[in-house]
Image (cartoon, rainbow, N blue to C red; front, top):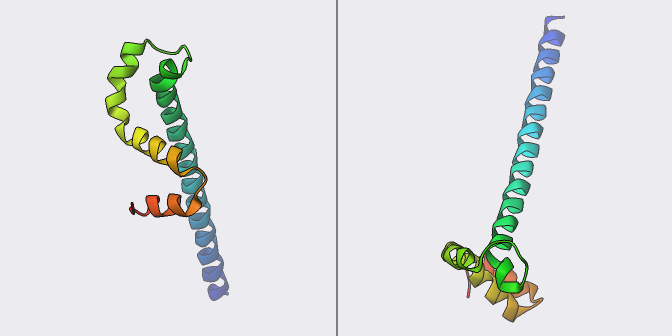
Length: 96
């Protein structure tokens, strides 16, 4: 009887642990999506006037351009590679 109770309590604790892990994972996913959304908004504010979309004054975009150096490098490298999936993988892993 006592062993059955212990096993039930142990399984209940495992259920709560898995539930908590799921809550954390869904929270992390929501934060990652929010981060991407903010990054897109920043890039649209930055590059909008450069491509003809009215978002911010051109001088403000040029001042912010310094903070997006890495994004510009990625943008330029993908522009040359096109749809080369292997090159994208090597680029992500730190290769040329």
